[in-house]
Length: 112
Image (cartoon, rainbow, N blue to C red; front, side):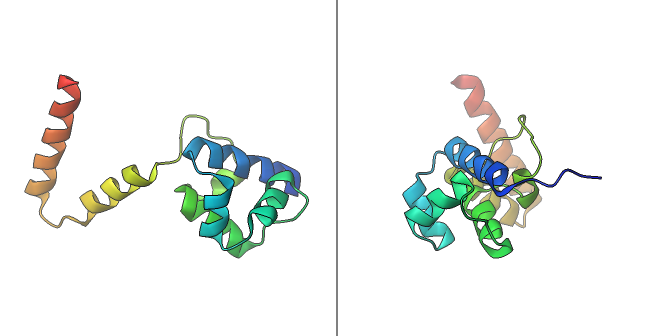
């Protein structure tokens, strides 16, 4: 059976994921729709995140909801600009244009 995590453990993961994403408590609180004080209570485990707030936090941090429950050190949350780039790339309907963009970006990294 899977271990049930406490509010404190989930709050700790929230804090870790927020810090890795480089987002302040104030900004995440705004994105989730709570006060900074409430976010601090979530992170400390004093208050339990409900399913709606958990989903909003995951979206704001560009992670999956399951990332609050499993440790995946090899996967870091995307920065806002990275998510925008990825979403924009995926929205391009023309595969040839996607391939051209991929070539440009891979060539740019070789020159850096």
